[in-house]
Image (cartoon, rainbow, N blue to C red):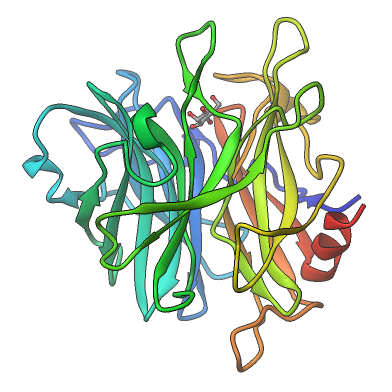
Length: 329
Ligand code: BMA
């Protein structure tokens, strides 16, 4: 088994969310967090949902990565009000540390479809909006609907890189989704150009639809990427799982290895039952130890934070070595 679930799972539930009246009172759920380690403390940027089904971001802090305190405050995104049209939800934040700044990439539901937003922060008191794409940038092309944006933790060849997932398919439920992860580049973090496809869903198997998980982790063997895959062919349910792949360090459109099986699937009651059943949605990953050149150490502990059933936050741990091994099975 690649991942071991923490015995305290779920590590955060709605009961841990303090009221922030009048906006958040008796929160409905908390899930799909972004994660980062800062000054020895573990931070989670939470997706908190109200009983009005509004979505807000809140911060949780911890000294051990397991027991978190949630700050009683909604984190504002300054600049979002300048965007024309309505932004209904911002959600699924992924945190990347780059040049000693924290960048948060998130999905934004608008009148015209899903967009990828990018904001920056030094302290998580507030996020400053850098840009919200028009949905046609990067791999989305003419489809103009895109989600699961993930910024790389360093420039490659002098340019910023991100993974994104054009939404070119519509499920019966009306949700738009996709089966291809793209690599896109940018000089200014605002306009993004597609460099090419990275990987496709494998129809009939566990990862028919796919999207990036947390930001890729640099290892000596390549960029280690956790992604989510959705099986759609089992009647009555979509099953969201996590899998792993290894991308070339200089050309991340080249997949060096990709695990055959999922490495984490809904099994526990808190993953099987909830607002959306059968969901493991990985969005935050912390690798404890890196060498002086910024490569993750093989024996380092890896903490994966994931949303369970769109209802709670869970933790599973492994090591870099085990993940690299899983890429080649
Ligand atoms: C995806 C995203 C996630 C969510 C998942 C399961 O399309 O919207 O935020 O966790 O569906 O509902």
